[in-house]
Image 1 (cartoon, rainbow, N blue to C red):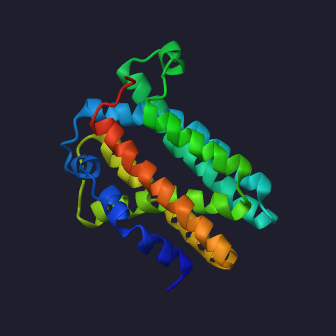
Image 2: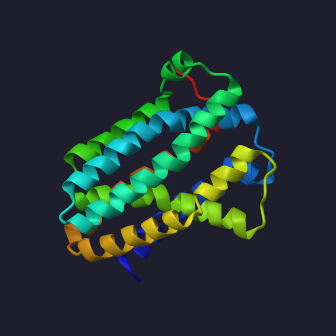
Length: 219
């Protein structure tokens, strides 16, 4: 078993909770309440800024130009797909630029974003790759499961959200991350640190769904 498969196996229960969460199931069935999706979508818009920091820092820390090219290409793909969808949804909802700029982090998003920034600034290159894999791989998994089950939600944003996360670019980037991590995580210390980051990210991903479903607010 490759190391990345071991990583996934080490968090099997959390993984399954993430990729089969009610949010995902309802999104595929077109039964997800739109206000719930809007909470998630707004928070993901804020979160993508910290995702951008992680990927940009990973590109800067890359040991070679090919690695940097892979990361920058995926960053461009994400900004071209998700960011355009964000702006389209905001226009449909009639949000002004001031309202978009005024979106505030909910507790889980703030904590998760802070964790990503810590990994980005203090982690080694391989640590950043593990963090990226822990974010992108489960998204690819749940989107694939919905697609293979023939889920075609009528809501344009729900359907597009599935399509974005099963794109060829997504598949290729996850494959590249897995191959790179399998080659780089060779010492016991490397692998233990990778397990911790991978587990932490999966926990935050689960909390992110819960934040939207439960309409989390500050106390």
